[in-house]
Image 1 (cartoon, one colour):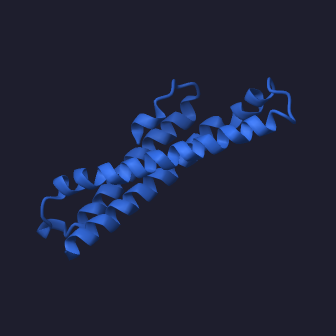
Image 2 (cartoon, rainbow, N blue to C red):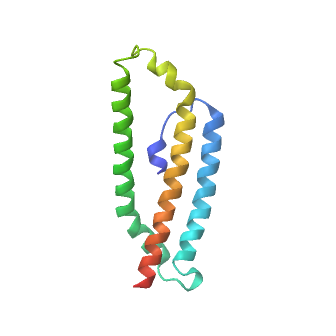
Amino acid sequence: MFAMRLNPIVDIGPSLINAFQSIVILIVGTNFCFKANGGNQGKQFLNRLICIFLPIGVKFFVAYLLVLIFIILGFVISARFIEPSIIPILIEPYKNWVNFFISIVIQVIMYWRFCIALKAINRI
């Protein structure tokens, strides 16, 4: 998930907040996944987490691309009604904060799906 946000840092405030929240979600999410795997009595936590990352990661990557395509289509359609040169000016103040909130949502949902998958594996 961190690789999707490799943008040049323009505004340090949202970037620092984003980095901090990513670390917090990483720690909390990994802890929840560890407990979903059975805690200290669980088996092969890292192996399982790495193996379920691929299918879940691919699904999230495809979903991310679909959302991006819908956003681009929205801009293409709105460009018919708004001067195209004004669109970057309208987007600029919100760009970092939208990336921040999308990052939070994607990370939380991803760890939630990891926990569900680990619980399902433990039932088998």
